[in-house]
Image (cartoon, rainbow, N blue to C red):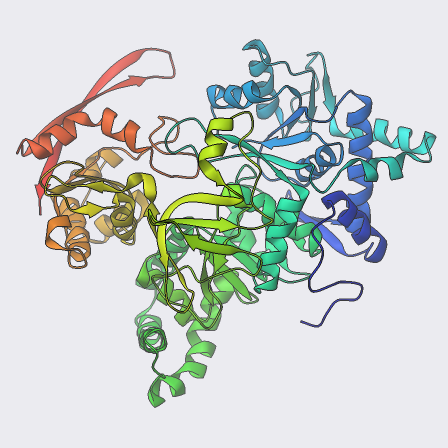
Length: 640
């Protein structure tokens, strides 16, 4: 891509998002900033319109009493107005505090307890109801601004205001005070708050932290210099707004590099909208890449013999060629000959169906991705790469370059990011993207920050050529009874490489052998069962089918081939339910809360290490009527 007019390849992060927004409006007023799918039609908003809307919102919020360091809770799915509301809050020095749309009232009250939350930006009636419930629980919410007015005409709660009214009040202020625009643009400081975000909370309640404009923009600059994205990229904003990756990419990089930010109609339409948009940049968790691969495989199973034969011929050749590249070899002459034909007949149409025909930068992050999945997309022509980052460093630490990919590394540290390995094996980083500390938690801040270095909490090492390898969480390094050192998460990630495994908890701390509690992927395993004529009536029923348990055992045996004898898994139990964030078993970003799982499923652990063949699990169920019942399920303990 040619250098865009008026842009610098190495922009200075000592500015603010709202000032960059003003620059976009001045230099590219008619360029599309947001595209939102609304009732089947893509609605467009230009940078000039976004700038005007953010200023109006900021003026309206300021008039309503929003002060610096006050909280603005953001409730709902990705919506342009919620993004613009967060920019407006940051312009005023307030804390934009997005939470997960499915967060429980107790989880949101934890957020409210950290900061005086005086405003709520709510997507719709459901989120307004949630905000009103928070008020009844004691939250000090003064104003609730809602985007979608449907169903709210008869609401009379104090402080309730529509986005349209808020914007109108702001417009009146701007019209009546000629110098107000410049004042609003000047309020924010580079070291002032851009967003108030939360850690994943794997070991307890999520910790709040403030990322400044400088933090966010430093991370964006580092990733941009490494080639993660470029000016004018098109992205799909579908990741939860409460996740740091979404804010850093959608708002940070989106504003700094003038992305076209596409908002899907809803969570259930993401894949359909992805195909319509065909973005140039796409980031997804390994599970999402796995799901798309499963969709391709399922469709191919249902296609004609000719199509299946063509798919097998060209994809197997492409996958073999990609494996040769990963091992440092050149593809064979036959593989080179088949590639352009396969691109025309097979790979090109598949990429078009997936919405990846214009994809230049594709990333996976959050955890390790399965080798088969990774190689498939590389063979398809999607230059999928690993990205490593975390909340405390504004999402960007290291990434792989397009043509220097290794399956076991996360690539090199980004330009502007220093990495060293502590004596304990912990990865430490220093960068302008690193936060200043956890909000109101000096003890946790001292544990995480050491003379300007961030203790990532991850164990790893640097290879001689500078490639970074991440092994897992330092806090999860444990030993078996024989003294074998291992990281459960490392084994769990490799088990999840199987498309049949959705979640897993590896057991064995202080024990003689390792075992695992496994949650099947209902969609994939369900399809596998249907293709073989295995009937089932529920997730619980499917999980206990002997054929399914043997299927999981096969996945475990495959992983065992890569593990030393002392760390091979000897027993598994297929759980009768998925791990659930509402039950506290995993975080909202699907990270395992090990202490909760081990406490809740103690009978399973006792059965595994007590030599039992089955275990009865009792669970309390609260029905919609409010009645409470008890269910019991007999689970099989499978010896490997």
